[in-house]
Image 1 (cartoon, rainbow, N blue to C red):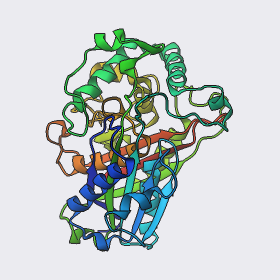
Image 2 (cartoon, one colour):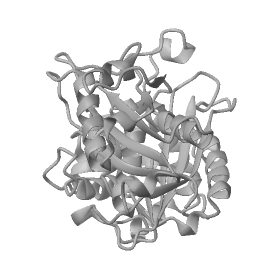
Image 3 (spheres, rainbow, N blue to C red):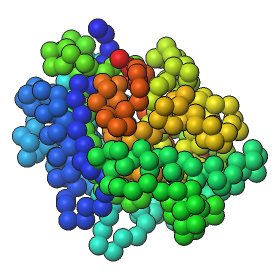
Image 4 (spheres, rainbow, N blue to C red):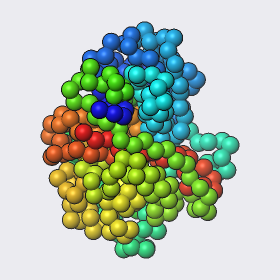
Length: 379
């Protein structure tokens, strides 16, 4: 064995939990991961914690009541890629010999008694003028539809697929499937995206225990290797996120494939950034699962279903599970850990050996986005 391994994972259910403190959510996920890994908490040498809006020293507050104090704790804010950034940081710290065992945590609380949008970024020009993500992705959808002939019906099928997967996931709150007609006829949010084309508001947390090759086998006979961990930021492009592809995802994925020694055709299961149906479709193409413009055809032909060419969002993704920003990237790694160990029950991807996790985060005027991450895991 060589490399860095995930040896345990834990998660809370993702749903509005207005009466539960975010630190308690993080603590529940962290403790579940510790128990799942069989690691003595005293053996954990380092913690990396991701969140977007939860204040200073977040990781310290999460771990205090578990008794994990005095260790190295790093906190990450990278918008929707915050949790994935924490995994990336811990991966590199263990790889550099800074620790043998560490925990990566992601958590977010977005619900409130009064609801409302995620807070805007006051010092960013477009955000200060009221830019919200549904409108950004609606513009991206129209670009893709106009260029490639992608249809509303194809986008609706993505929501249907992800809800179908999500009701099989105990960490997702949904119990009933939906139809394409329901998606298309739901209240319009930003044309062509209806309410069921958008991820719901949710609170939640996830955590993974990671270890070096030196100690991983001491705790489990089924460790899952992180073959590559890539973090990238956007470049100036003139249109921000409102495009029919993600240049930085394509760039990050290329590096991740090279580091892992695999290609798109080797990926069995993928958890990608799908806050809106069009985002999932665009990222099929960005990640190389199909050629540019073929995402709609792939949806129609079932390429991305649970038993398709590559199973995308078997957890239900953000569309079914919700998107508590800092938690998402860690939750993706947890899902792949369980998938590659064959522990996902009704949503299990058959013979899954290689998985890919992908997040995008942060609207920043004049660049595509703030951050993207791609992790490839394998057994």
